[in-house]
Amino acid sequence: MANRSLRFHVGAQIGIAWIILMLGLTALGLTMSADYVLNIDLAHRLQPPLMFGGNSVNILGTDELGRDMAARLIKSIEVSAGIAFCATLLGLFIGTAAGFVAAEARGVLDQLVQGLIDFQASVPFLIIALTLLAFFGNSIVLFVCLMSLHGWERHARVARSMAMEANALGYASAVRQLGANTMRVYALHILPNIAGPLIVSATLAFPEIVLLESGLSFLGLGVQPPLTSLGAMVGFGRDYIDVAPWMVLLPSAAILLTTLSINLVGDWLQDWLAPRRR
Amino acid sequence: MIRFVAIRLLRAVLTVLAVALFAAIAMRVSGDPAVIALGPTAPAEAIAAYRVQHGLDQPLVVQIFVQFTALLSGDFGISPLNGRSALQVVSQRVPLTLLLAIPALLIKVLVGIPAGTIAAIRQNSLLDRLVMSASVIGIAIPNFVIGLGLVLIFAINLGVLPSSGQPNLPGMIMPVLTLALAGIGTLARFTRSSVLGVINQPHVRTAYAKGLTERQVIRRHILPNATAAMFPVLGLMLGSVLAGTVVVETLFSWPGIGSLLVTAVANRDIYVVPCILVLSSVVMTLTNVGVDVLQALRDPRILQRGR
Image 1 (tube, rainbow over the protein chains, first blue to last red):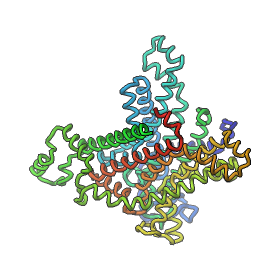
Image 2 (tube, chains in turn purple, red; image 1 turned 60 degrees about the vertical axis):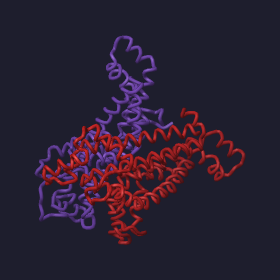
Image 3 (tube, rainbow over the protein chains, first blue to last red; image 1 turned 45 degrees about the vertical axis):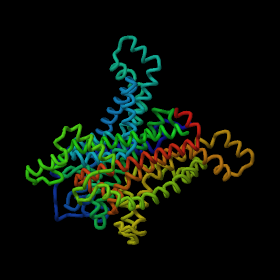
Image 4 (cartoon, one colour; image 1 turned 120 degrees about the vertical axis):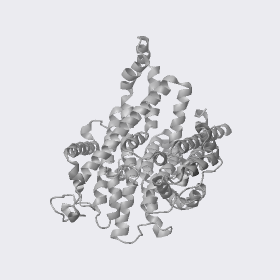
């Protein structure tokens, strides 16, 4: 049997290291003034990173407007990770609530929730997302809500089946007979007991949302300037790929490290929290 | 079996109806079609006349119903961008997208399934670790990063392939590779775990015990059982290829449905977008029905479970 301790899981250690570094950079980003990130310096445009013969002021080079790549990367990591984090939490909330409602109400409401799950699974989410963007335009709040719709159906499926299982067990009916109302039974008794699989489901959703957000921003349909995200940086850098490949490679590497880290940590969490599912 | 197919088909029809209804509501609730058709500078009388002419003065529910029935009869409206019917604009692009999607799906299956099988049979070997590490990275990497990496290597550094896709063989190579590589890891991983599920079962041990070679056991006893569990993933693969074409076609300026969708969304073309949405839901649900039926033919136990 595989040892589930973190000590033996090198991938998860690397993943956690990058996540901590990312959080540190995000904290650093919050203290950075907006002027510094947006500072345009046309005299020093398209400078290569230090290790490829660049200057020591802009250690990761500059972009097409002479803005510092390091500062923009930190800002982008902050935005991308922030969007993915908010959207994952919101999606987890929506999915869990829908799953609980389906499990409690059964009947028509259950059918409705299952119909919505089928609906979402019937079309690639990217196409649904693009349709909603076409009809309702784009703003950062709307965009986060849109991203949260990705993966809610998996959380809902998990929450629904686990809550049905839990309801059949003694503890749920025991607290019900003690007079706890439905909200209390679900929030204080069932939720803590099924949190493991839900957290695993969320760690699956998070990297997918990072990929989705970066894909849409790459296409120019996600995060809009002056705000920037990792995908948007790759999208704008694409036009300069032959003269300044670092503009594409640096944010690409940041995306890859982020999704890879969460996947590795998720694998380990899955072994640790829900060993039954292998 | 007939009952099973009928139930699946009914569910597929209901799903497509739901997608069409969603599209109809979105088309009527967002923005004013009269302003979109005539432009924001059109005089108020012209807009009013257009509204009466196209039934936009009716109650919202009636409008949504009219739109819904129009979508179902294949009338997606006239695209304001080029003045032709949306269905025409979209269907013209279908062959070019298939030209990318079909080879990409083939490569995915022909590489992903053998790689996963070998990894499972040689579990914990160097090869297994290699395949698994590659697939972990393959799952984490965005498709546009794969595409730009290929451009950087083959178009810019080596200069052997064109970076924007003309619909010919050299122009196809990079878009097809990008589509195929994204998601191949998921397939390899899934194949590995399904083969691992079969490999330790008694009938496989019996097959070895009666003296079959490893090749025979894999071909006749392991793969048929493992693939039965893998049909649903092939449905998912189609979905990921469909979504992938959106990014890949834009990246390589390939004139297929995916790049059309991006242009349509950027220009808020409210006729082409629902057309693509409804058509792709039809393709996806029909594929899923086909996959379900194939799976049931392969594994009749599903018929009992599906009741």
